[in-house]
Amino acid sequence: MTDAAASSAPAPSTSASPANAQSAQPEINWTALLLGFAGMVIGQFMAILDIQIVAASLPQIQAGVGASADEISWIQTAYLIPEVVMIPLSGYLSRLWGTRIVFLASCTGFLIMSVMVGLSSSIEMMILFRALQGFVGGAMIPTVFAVAFTAFPPEKRVTASVIMGLIVTLAPTVGPTLGGHLTEQLSWHWLFFINVFPGVIVLFLVGRYAHFDKGDPSLAKGFDWWGLCLMAAFLMSLQFVLEEGAKEDWFADDNILLLSIIAGLCGPAFIWRSLTYRNPIVELRAFGNRNFVVGVLMTFIVGAALFGGTFLLPLFLGRVREYSAAEVGTTMIVSGLAMFATAPFAGRLVRKVDARILMFVGFMLAAWGMWDARIVTDQWGFWEFAGVQAMRGAGVMLAMIASQQVTMATLPPHMVKNASGLVNLSRNVGGAFGLAILNTSLTQNTALHMAELTSAIDQTHQGVRDMIAGMAVRFSGSIDPQASAMKAVYGLLQKQATTLAFGDAFALLAIGCACAGFLTLLSKPAKPNPAAAPSDVH
Image (cartoon, rainbow, N blue to C red):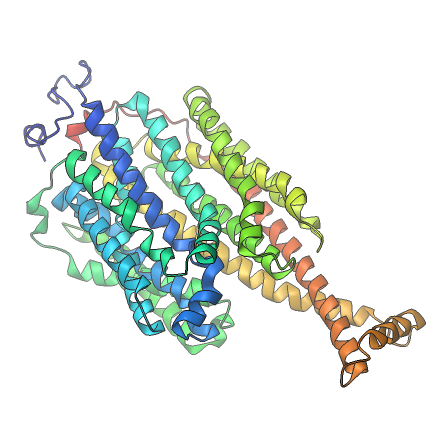
């Protein structure tokens, strides 16, 4: 796109030509920019929130649609698998049609599919509409990121980045809490119907004010269908393997093995196609920028820390402490409060302190919090986890804001749209990798600790025999008091083994965050390129 074309947009963002864009301050319609951006941010929040909003309500959904325990997990998996295809594809579509049209189409499709999911009467219908919801809604996530680094002037981009950081971190954190309360107060259908109200606001604000750029129809010529097929096969196979591998014992399952082979073949083929085709769907030249590579790696680990921590704590509270959805939400609120409190300071610090130092500090804070949780016991609750969550929440927020600056600061403006899709993809895939590793760790270490505990118990020991006899007396009203007592002992051992396994998982997450902190030293100081006027970027 040329600057002349951009200047004809209904809400012009600059009056400067490329020749004098650096010497003259571009005129920006701040009312239109802020209202349009606010609408996009609300849409991004909805799309990210819907990943986790069903987490605390799966039993109610299972009963409502008559699904089996194996089938109900697909409510989340079906959303995530197609979403990873749309996230990188959205950069190409934004350049082709323009950000506003892509976002409006994405939001409209997302709202329609949300209603259809809520009206579903069978698990098959729900999985289909949930997959379509994830696919069309996926474009709302990276387009906001691109606008923050193209439509805003350099001195305001950190503020926009802080807002995005809050959305990206808070949405998955409050998702299970909000979902649990909605299900308890109304019904599980409202997990999806609730999107309609903010969605209408999003459509109005974006449709009226988000005239950030125009599309380039010439990109439609020579559309890379082979590249799209290879990318879809690679990303969807990889996401399926990561989501379902731990449950299916990884490569012992034929489907997991087959999809791993498909991902292993299609991944390199997609990269080769993207590097050699004249009009690739995903532009990979951004990986030639060292800071971008380091930033993507950091974002990958931020995704693992963010989604991993959000996964472990509710699971522990539900599985070990047997908390309700509301109790889990009350306990998890500390993490959200820590992120809110940290965000303004992170925005100020990133303007004054080397972003690499902030990344290092952020990852170390998150590692410290997770490491403290390695000594978790089956009695830990709100107060014991408060410090852990505060450290993790503050650390993840610092690391995320700083990594966004490192990733995007040295990229030329014409690469930002594609790069934003790659950054968001790395966070989602990082989260999937983190959950796969943590799931596998929990399964294997629970079995390992159970074996250690049972082997350490000598049933001939008088103390053990007295304990079992005492329990048998308590179960004297049952058909087989002795068997009931042994089952109770087994349950106690299983609870302890599970608790120890969670401690190992927290420690594993802490080590990953600490390693990420030292990896930040590989990046160079982020010295932004002279910013182009917002209309220069298409």
